[in-house]
Image 1 (tube, rainbow, N blue to C red):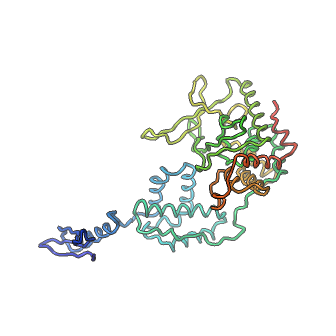
Image 2 (cartoon, rainbow, N blue to C red):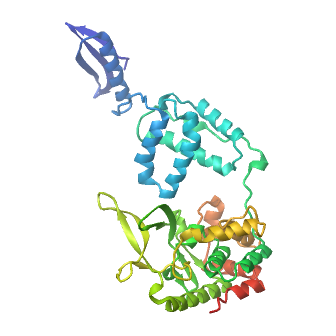
Image 3 (spheres, one colour):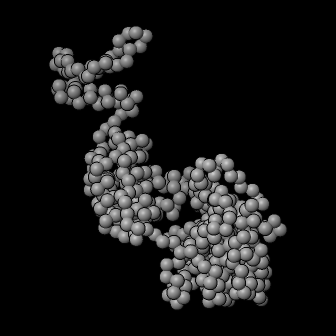
Length: 423
């Protein structure tokens, strides 16, 4: 096969190029009728490029990277990613990526330019390595799809970009709760039952924050001592029906069962007993909720939101949420916002978060003999080394043992007093 040839045929021009032979016979692609030689050359080169790409046409993309990112968010992200992930991507794009790279054409951005961008960003901001990795993830994903899905660029310049070496002090330091800190926090919030019980639930299971506040009483099997983790909550801008939505867990492996330790079992049982008592005390003033499906223009269910019941109406899709205020009011993860302001400012635990209870749980049981495979199953992780994935088996007995190991590590008079939830 050769390159494109242009011939004059009377008053017009024709392009012609050879393609793969079929049955030993030479084959050509040609087209005539072009008024000028330049037109024939341009069309012939485009046709040849399409041929060598197995029939997929390639057109040089003159779109700016900024406009492409908007296109990518609307056409790929919104149909493949969860709402919270889209919001996080949008923030990273608008704050860091568009201001530095958005003005360039998508097709002109090179791997050198991308490596300069990420290096400059690391120098400019004191973020954790994981935060920079998220920015890198957006860049890599957007260029991958521009190349592999949309065919807007011939090669992916983001394939070779890496984070530069970072100073240790820039690394994110996660807070590991001590028994003394947990005791002090619970002592400070005596009487705020929904907060202390949600705190204990995360503390004694390592559940994600969104998973804790998505729990319903149907998810908790007191007889078998199991929490069925199937959902997570997230919020969107408020409208007349509220702002809380309930969706799937963060990952497929996030859907799992967790065994309930003795202390947490007592806490949840007593908290439910008190909640049932408060329902009787508040009577018609107690607030209940139901699930409402949100559909797109095709009638497909895309989200499920949590909506307050109207007085006097009956609903088929009621949801009995665990962590609500005394009058039944559901505030999602907002329940922990004010307590953690006090924890940081009054109690002096400056860098701690509710989410750090998850890491504290994992660290404690790992340091006390529980295998990594067990911890991965409890936390809903699948990222364990190949050896552990194939040669260490997780069983219900060992996971039960993990919860009891942690239970023994977290014994204190304050915890014993709190979990009674006296009426």
